[in-house]
Image 1 (cartoon, rainbow, N blue to C red):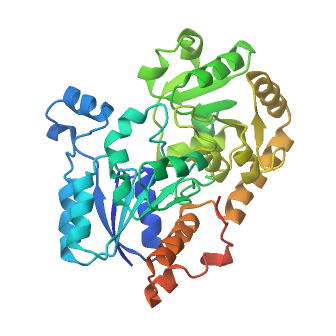
Image 2 (spheres, rainbow, N blue to C red):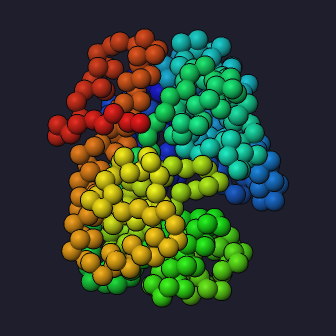
Length: 370
């Protein structure tokens, strides 16, 4: 299978790691980067304004790269991963240049959520794709109303080469370990929960983007517990693996029912204490493979309990890691399932596609997705 893959090619981005997983499955992939050097920007202010208006500048030249690849006639699949700089006209022209090109949009964020203005251009491209993969049930009808011909759900996943248990030295445990750890962006309810933990006398560490957290009403309380992020790669895995409890909050901006960290924390061997959702408790058995809370009071109660019961906490963390592996929550397994759906819908049937859809390595069963 030959595909054009459009996304952020930063070494630790989710899209780049999904690209590597597709290559691991045997696909021949042409990467098209949507990132850019700030030196190419007309001004940083103009770039930010255009992005927040929903029409970010294509400073990387991704649209032209797509057209050049389509004109070659070599590729049968265009896979766009969360790229908001792609123009509707580009997608239409690519199909004209290569009529057999099957166009797929894979999204993680919710373009109809609280920050929907950021996705104005992307929403306009929705009718151009033959297939959409979305992570939320609510998005299916929303995409259809926006003109999508076919919308299927996908499941968030983790990168097994990055998110994995690591052997830590005493110095690394000292540097990265925490009693209670949260890594992520600011939202009001997260701030309230973290402030409640601190007021209850529990030891909290927060890692995130400084500028937004410092605008919160509890910043003076949280500041002594704050470390400016982000944390990437092996250091991310070290922090999750070395901490006794890692917290998972659902983004209200994004209407999340699970997040990437729902999988990444257990995959790193960490103990997941996450905000409750019906979906998350289907993925990890409460009290056996992870633990969940539905209020600040329950969060405080369970955080205190599991800090005091190390054997039970460590047993649950081990079971969560095993669940990730047993159920195939990793990128290659999930992408194999999505490629199977693409092939069935597009009608492709070749020896190459059969090889890509062959049984996973080590006999690991594939999970059914959501």
